[in-house]
Length: 139
Image (tube, rainbow, N blue to C red; front, side, top):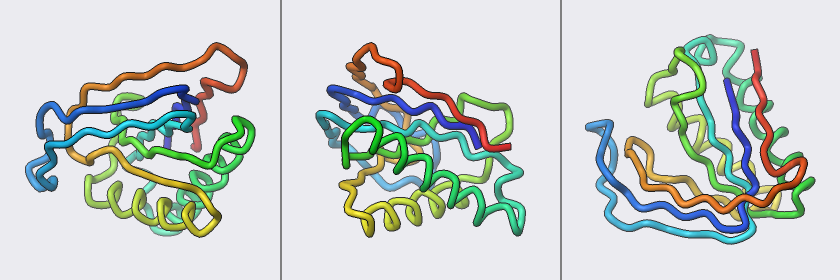
């Protein structure tokens, strides 16, 4: 798994075009202020039995840590399949995102996901400080 974490003063998206036929129909965008954006690349090897639980735990713990460091309880999970050549199946990725969202909510986070299976118009306003942009690889 690869993560690009971006703290955003403002983040918004608007659906552009569907990239996965099984994706739900989405026409509306959304926006947040003072939010931790988690751009996530789930890799094929993350689906392996025994590894998937560790991947989920690592994603959860790192997201909580970086959100706390950036003094926010708002998190947006975004599938960003451009950080590696290896890609997990869309089904596995969606299940992982749903589980992490649910677990983050249990810890008091306000959580959303960008529409899965879409190319999106993104608007990112990210301040320039040390932990505003962090890359993490879980190998």
